[in-house]
Length: 138
Ligand SMILES: *[C@@H]1O[C@H](CO)[C@@H](O)[C@H](O)[C@H]1NC(C)=O
Ligand SMILES: *[C@@H]1O[C@H](CO)[C@@H](O)[C@H](O)[C@H]1NC(C)=O
Ligand SMILES: *[C@@H]1O[C@H](CO)[C@@H](O)[C@H](O)[C@H]1NC(C)=O
Ligand SMILES: *[C@@H]1O[C@H](CO)[C@@H](O)[C@H](O)[C@H]1NC(C)=O
Ligand SMILES: *[C@@H]1O[C@H](CO)[C@@H](O)[C@H](O)[C@H]1NC(C)=O
Image 1 (tube, rainbow, N blue to C red):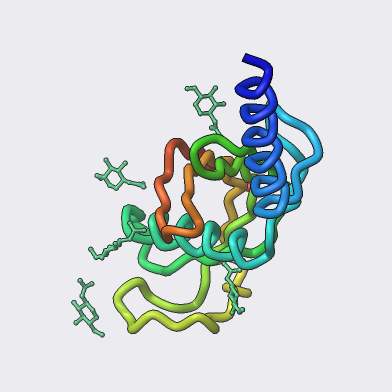
Image 2: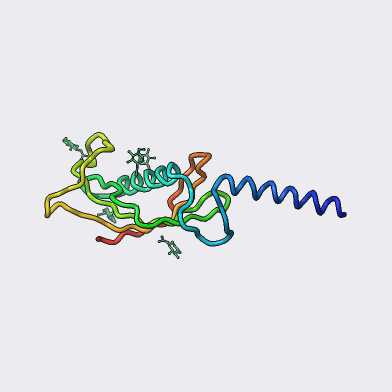
């Protein structure tokens, strides 16, 4: 009984150490201020904007203009609750996708949205799923 108790505790400790190493966690429960790697955040944003452009009817592609806020929570994967500003670029949706499309400067073509989205990711498996998303014109 006692041995089992300690074995379980050691196991729990090992899991905690592993999780802490993966995400630098200090607290449990709820969303935390961003603390995961820049690379994961970047892939998450990439997936979001690709999805946005996929379903958008706009003539032009949008791109992430500014990351305003991001929170994350560890579940079976990593959940991100993010606020971003996205802006219309000069590239048409049609054109071959370029990562370096400049943002529109012309007054009548300028357009930006502030988007809130919740995404479930399993970064180490390259898995991304947009759970919900709402954008308001900025
Ligand atoms: C992700 O990082 C690459 C360079 O590392 C950058 O070119 C790209 O714009 C980033 N994507 C987003 C959505 O910020
Ligand atoms: C966007 O559309 C392309 C082509 O239909 C698809 O391969 C890709 O997975 C989509 N991306 C997202 C993020 O939905
Ligand atoms: C795209 O157009 C369709 C039909 O006009 C509309 O129902 C849909 O909401 C539009 N999608 C976006 C992202 O604006
Ligand atoms: C893509 O652009 C070409 C011209 O560059 C145009 O002829 C074609 O209709 C466009 N296709 C779509 C789906 O918008
Ligand atoms: C996602 O949906 C849930 C429930 O519908 C809502 O409480 C939450 O605010 C939404 N999150 C975003 C980022 O829109």
